[in-house]
Amino acid sequence: GQQVMQIPQYQHVQEGEDFTTYCNSSTTLSNIQWYKQRPGGHPVFLIQLVKSGEVKKQKRLTFQFGEAKKNSSLHITATQTTDVGTYFCAGRKGFGAGSYQLTFGKGTKLSVIP
Amino acid sequence: DVKVTQSSRYLVKRTGEKVFLECVQDMDHENMFWYRQDPGLGLRLIYFSYDVKMKEKGDIPEGYSVSREKKERFSLILESASTNQTSMYLCASIGGAEQYFGPGTRLTVT
Image 1 (tube, each protein chain N blue to C red):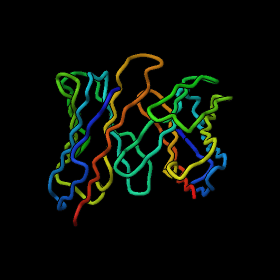
Image 2 (spheres, rainbow over the protein chains, first blue to last red; image 1 turned 135 degrees about the horizontal axis):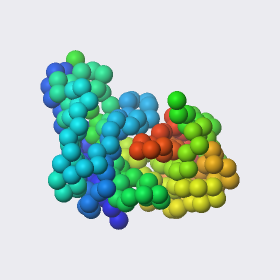
Image 3 (spheres, helix red, strand yellow; image 1 turned 45 degrees about the vertical axis):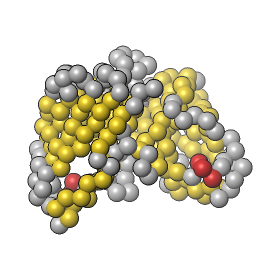
């Protein structure tokens, strides 16, 4: 079945440092989504990438979707303590109705040292 | 604002008990999902439903069943709870691109 690998599993950074998490799929994806889960909370949708080579930015967060649509990354510039949490990528394989199933990576847990 | 609610935040059950986890969404979404989340394993899909009375197995359906009698409600059933089903259970529904998650139920089976 489809697998989505995500690295690293944990990342500790000093506040102000950059952070990147990477996602790789065993199969070509129709799109990829990113979620953030704060400690004690539930996953919250951040963004969806659909096009090959797509790059999207949300303030200090930059999301990329690879040319082959099998990998993706999330980069945070100048981390802040509010960035603490676990970041998940989730890949969707198909298109259209009935293909809403997502395969989640195991997540990267980010700790920010003030 | 989309709301996905789950019947309990914390639940403690004994081995062998039948357990019902309820999920309700208020946005008329057709697709609903049940995941379990365990440390180091991420979110794993148990079952999903794309319409009333329709269900599909996810990656780890063994030991679980589901019920979708009404569009807004998706129930997860543990027929005979076991200690390895101790976990955080998350329900989600999908509207447009994103999945909206409920707050989760932390189930402990003793």
